[in-house]
Structure formats: structure tokens, C-alpha cells
Length: 166
Image (cartoon, rainbow, N blue to C red; front, side, top):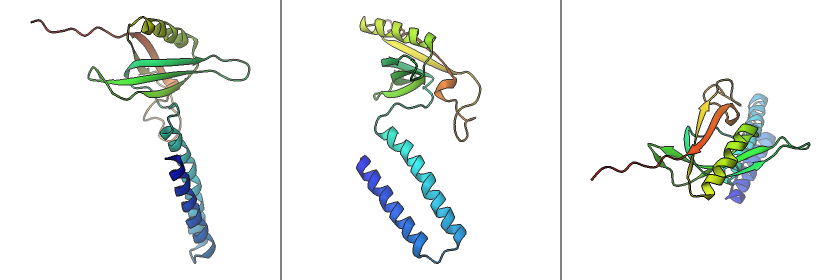
């Protein structure tokens, strides 16, 4: 899939170069084409990472089931990160496909995740909630949705479903 995207971008660049060199278009239109192709490259770079299964820096779903986690503790060379593999909950039912998320390292959340992993190994499913802290997200139109670093995340035991009486 990524090879096809690379070839598609190469074809786009070839068309843009041909249009820039041999077209009678005005200079402002050629400059707009060059700028648009450059912006599209960076947007496509992020999209390819999402397709390849790289952990998302997007905000976590409001409610989720924690499938797995990995903690990368901070040291002198790196800030550290928390990687969560979660299945979003909708109307009390978890989606079939999990998604990987990357969160900034937080000691309190690290302890919650470790406790959740221990309970998960003992057969107790873990769920989480993510609430917006308020503040500013990242990127264009950041006020629409908080980033992963502006969420209060809590991990707890998944409640046992109540069966109806016979």
C-alpha cells in the first residue's frame, strides 16, 4: 500500500514539474501549485503513518477497553511515552478492531497502566475513560478537539455485565 502511495506522489510531482516548466500559466498560479504540492506532501506523510499502524497522537476515545500497553520511561535522551492499544466503547460494546495511541509520559498514568496490566494478566478486563482537561490542542482548528496530551485518562476494572433475571 505504501509503495502505491509513493508512486502516486511521484506522479503528482512529475505533473507539477511539467506544469511549472512548460505551461503558459501566470507565475502566481505556478507558485500556488508548488505550495499546494508541498503542503500535500506533509499531509500525506501523516496519512501514510496512520495507514502503516503507527500509534496515533489523536485524542483517546471517551470510553475504551485497554487491550495492551507499553511504557517507555523518560531518560536523558528522550521524554518517554505511553503506548496504549485500545478498543473504543460505543453503547457498552467494544469495537472489533483495536487502535494504537501514543501519550506523553505521565508518572501517575504509568502507575495506573502497570496496575491495569497486572489485573489484565489475572483475567480482569480493564477499561478507561478520557476526559478533556480544557486548554488548546495541536494543529489547525485545535479548538475543535483536544489532543492526547490534554486529556485526563483513568484506567479501572471493566464492570461485570448484569444479566437479566429469568
